[in-house]
Image 1 (cartoon, rainbow, N blue to C red):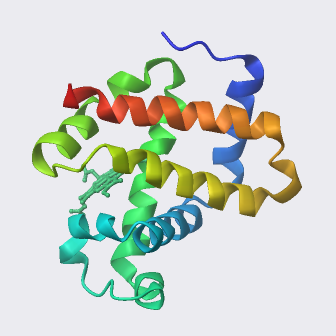
Image 2: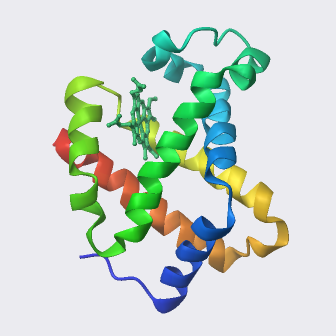
Length: 147
Ligand code: HEM
């Protein structure tokens, strides 16, 4: 089982309570679809993703970014059992959506960049380490049903 220090628990709680998850999710998913364009193939029913401006203006991207952050908020509330909380999501991404699991880390990195940008100086190296660990556990839990 993953062990969390008091600092890590407090930091993750703090990040999710302060940040606007809709804003973070939208910006992170936009970044992911732009920086790693092959990720667009999973979102063909989202409509126009033909340029960074089109991606940024696409309401389905914004809505889905919020959904992704909702998944991470659930994980943040269940730090001691993220694997179980993500069981259905892992099955969905592997069996139905057939998302290449390498992409989870790419989206997680985009989320880190957006959170760092929004938090500015408050995103210290200790905060970064705690958030990185949280995302690594979330990504590994999403990958679980692939093995
Ligand atoms: C759907 C979370 C990464 C592709 C979802 C849903 C959640 C979620 C909560 C909605 C599930 C439902 O409707 O029951 C996450 C999290 C991720 C992640 C927490 C990693 C941090 C990715 C990546 C891709 C992807 C990297 C593709 C590159 C999709 C697609 C859907 C979906 C295509 C269905 C969208 C729709 O039909 O509206 N994801 N996801 N996900 N995810 Fe992910």
